[in-house]
Image 1 (cartoon, helix red, strand yellow):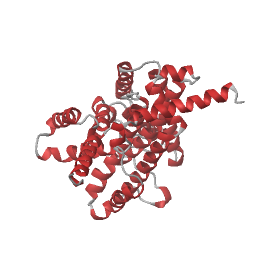
Image 2 (cartoon, helix red, strand yellow):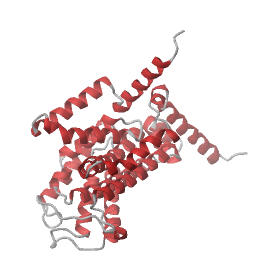
Image 3 (cartoon, helix red, strand yellow):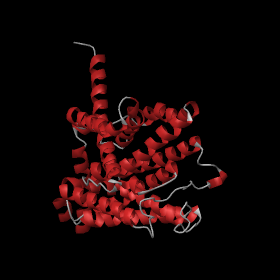
Image 4 (cartoon, one colour):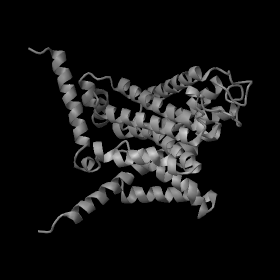
Length: 356
């Protein structure tokens, strides 16, 4: 005869799976992308992209898209799976970049410690993940609009703290001349190599989110999103799971932050200002929060607009353009670009069916 604890665990797993299945109902099922061979053309294109594209496309379009996609993916994991909309993901990414400059080498020798990259990189990831955990501890006490407000308040507070603190963050100027580590004797500043580095990190983060989506932890987080009271009655520690989700998402955002500071070669308060913080939310919603590929689609659209919209309009009006695109997607496709993909796929399927 099964013990009470075993029965409770079985019921909890069934509840978590049922909640995930509920949220992946007919509408979510329509957004499911092909697996296996369906990704082969996309994978081949990503692999050969820097071979026929120029340095600008490989670095400023390809690598930048992947980096923003990684940071937005961390927000998609929190908001899409856990129902926790955090506006502090770019702040966590900036925290990793700042501490990599502090622990490693930069133009500000009076502050930078000059440690080896093998030491400064894991330490900066650790500090950023700890910072994300602290954000989770505060945000787990709130829900809904209050979660958005508390994470935005943390992001704004960190922005002004870095801007006004000169002893640790060098104030308004920040840090410059931050080079990527020379791992394995390779020059990672080369656009092609750096693109492949960003692609590898993006694939690892994507695979991790896909795995977590169907893992026990991921199903529990999705169940907490749908019914916290039931999960609490089953013995789950709601706040503990939410904090763990923030820490997991924070580690992904920290990886994106390291890549971002290596791409730009510098970091300053402008990197983590209110504008970049909101941009990550726009990217995630623009691409779609129902599948891990959505943030990368949103990042691609954002980077293309950011790079080429100035050819048609003034730079100062870019926010107007991205805002109008955001409103158009939200109004006509609440599921973002993924929703447009699903509609186009269904339309093609209907047009290919023989009429009776």
